[in-house]
Image 1 (cartoon, protein in one colour):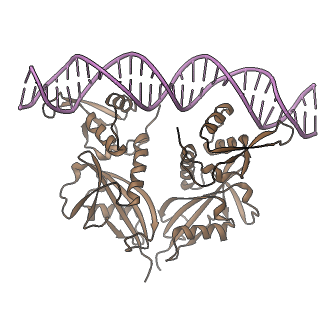
Image 2 (cartoon, chains in turn red, cyan, brown, blue; image 1 turned 45 degrees about the horizontal axis):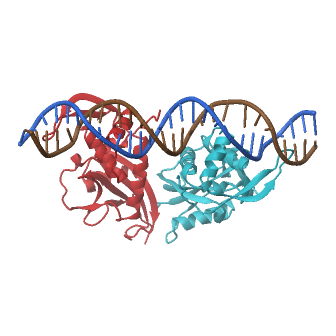
Length: 195
Length: 195
DNA sequence: GCAAAAGTGTTCGTATTACACCCATGT
DNA sequence: ACATGGGTGTAATACGAACACTTTTGC
């Protein structure tokens, strides 16, 4: 029996104001790594074929490499997470929703990394549709940070980062005042100037 | 020919006020990973046998896993860095000093991670002897951050973190006023309370 | 007219920066 | 006596936290 190296991908999305992950038939999406394929390409293949999503629709980041992962299906697992907006997830067949907290130490580690990342990069874009209102953005931050935020302070902070463009459009949802619609200046991972 | 997984260790230390790394015969210390040995154990072995240091004398952290590393000696390299105080490095035979900046993108990534870590943990302890004076500590911070710091502000901040104990001893070096000698409260990685 | 979410400023406390001089020692 | 690094305080500013009411729409 030989060494097997696996790539695992933890898909993360926001559903109903919660940061959640999905498992497929009780397992984290994964595949054996084959020589002459980069780790990044394998990760993309997993997202494409197992998760059933377009890797380009989300944000991929390497999380950690562990030996002897619990599942015993690999000797080493190189773990990535994949952030994707709920809107891209079309047919959740065979998928089981899992709340994020205790599944795996790696998921809470991913959450930690995310908390830190959304403070100084624009990667939250990957959890939102192209156009959105500030309330939606705030709910994403709150889901990741696990606490509520003050609306005024949040808007002040976010707008000062100058990572959003005001589309000029307005959107009304239900019986409430219509909100300004925003869009990310860029949907590529970018470090936000803290000025 | 089969897949080969390598573990690499980037040793980092402070020498003459600079954060540097060492290579051995022009290569980063590494070895092939063998099944049934954890990554952590292999890393410790590399530090022990190739770097020639005691892993317990420094701080080890996983950095990143890459496929197709330049050296072509592995298909995949799982890279760690090892922080160690200059004082522990006894016989640098076969070792070549390398300044940190451009060697490898991973080294600048390690530097980034370090910059962020020393702000909220006590891991700098690993780059210092048991007892030291605040000037030495400041020089370590400056080497990692790559800029000079104001002495008064530095002392205020560091002492407010309450991660140091005053030994009561004084040390004079050369013709200057003797300095208070400090010691880390604990030499285990600890998250510093930001109070 | 009422429910629901959007939008908007000010105040306060804390943390960060900038900055200059005297001290204790070895030579 | 002088060179060397150690040690100390204050003022200005920037930043984050707390906080309440008005607006626009759908029903």
